[in-house]
Image (cartoon, rainbow over all chains, first blue to last red):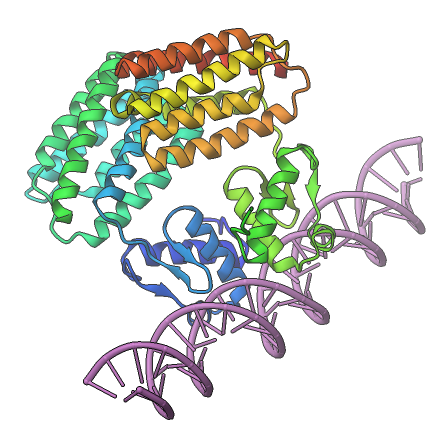
Length: 214
Length: 214
DNA sequence: GTGCTGCCAACTGTCGACAGTTAACATTGC
DNA sequence: GCAATGTTAACTGTCGACAGTTGGCAGCAC
C-alpha cells in the first residue's frame, strides 16, 4: 500500500539517513563517513553524497570542506534562533487557520486534543507523537503549503534537539491547556488570539528546552 | 577583492547556476541539460548535479524523476503561498527589529530610505536593488539569523518571479512611503505597528505582482 | 488519414577509480 | 620534555563510463 515514493537510490538514502539522524542512531556531533555508510546502505558514494547534501539543506547535517558531514550540535543561541523562526511560522499558521478553518478542521483538532488528554490521563506521559499531530492538524487548517513545508523542516530540527535531551519535561499539562486554548481560538475564528496563544505556547516550550539544555 | 568563498567546483557551480537562473539566462520553464551545462562550465557532471540539487532545495529549480531539472513557473496560487510565507517571516522580523534595533540600525535604515527617494526623484524608477537593501537592513536590525536566512531564500524566489515580469509596476511611491513608515515604527520601538505596516506593505506588493501576472 | 506498436536516440541514475587535501602521527632538533 | 616539521593514512572532491528509463519518431495496420 505504501508506494516507494522515491524510486531513486538517492531518494531512499535520504529517508534512511534522515531516520538514522532523527532517532539518534547517528548522535549529534558524530561525523558521517561516506564510504562506510555507502557500504552499509549497499549503494555507491554518488547517491549517498546527494542524500547528505539534501539533509544538510534541511539542517539535519552540517558540511565542512574536506571534512565531510556531521550531525549538528546546538547551543542556547541556536535554540533561541530556531524558536524565533518557529514562532514566526506557527503564529502565522495559527492566524491563517483561525481565518480559514472548516468545521471538519475543528473536529479533527478537537479529536487530537481529546486523544492527548486520554493518553495523559492514562498515566502515560504526553506522547510527543500527538503533539506533532496537533501542530500538523493546525497546519492543514491553515492551508498554506509553503508555511507548512517550512514548519515541517523546523519541527524536524526540534526533534533532533529533543533526541539529545534525555529528561522529558514536566510542562506537559500546560501544553495540553495551550492546545485546548488554541483550538478554542481557531474555532471562534479569532486570528489574533490564536496567534497570541501560539506565541506563549512556543515561548514556554522554548524556555523548557533551554533549561533542559543547561 | 572577491575571495573565492567556495573552493569546490560544486560550490562555484552553485553560484554560477544561481546567477544564470536569477538573471533569466535560463528562463522559467526551460530545462537544464546536465552534460551540456557541465561542458559549458568546464566541470564534470558530479559537481554540477550537486549544484542542481542545492538550487532545487532553494526552490530555484524543480526536479522531475528521469527528466532532470527545470526552472519553475509560478501561477497565482504559488505567488499567494509564497507571499504568505514571506509575510510570516518579515512581519516577525519587523517586530524583532523594533524590539532590538540600535541607533546605528536606525541610521542605516534612514540612509537607505533617503537614497531610495533620491534615486526616485532623480527621475529613475525605484531601483529594486535599494528595495532589497532596505529589507536586508531591517533583517540585520532583527538579529535573528535563521529568520534572515529564510527571508533570503524567499526573496530569491521573488526575484525569480520578477524576472518573468517585464513591466515594472506603478506602486513604487507607495513602497517608499511604506518603508518610511516602517523605519518610524522601528525607531519608535513599536513592534505591533512595525508588523502591521510590513503586512500591508507586502500585501500591496503581492497584489501588484498578481495583477502583473494576469 | 488515424491510431497503435516497436524502435531509437538522448538523457538521467549509478558506479568504480583517481587525485587532492586534511589531520593525526612519528621524527627530529632544541 | 616540548615544539616544530616531515610523513603517511584516511577521507573527500572529481572524473569518465556504463546501465536504465523516458519521450519521440518511424513504420505498419486499418
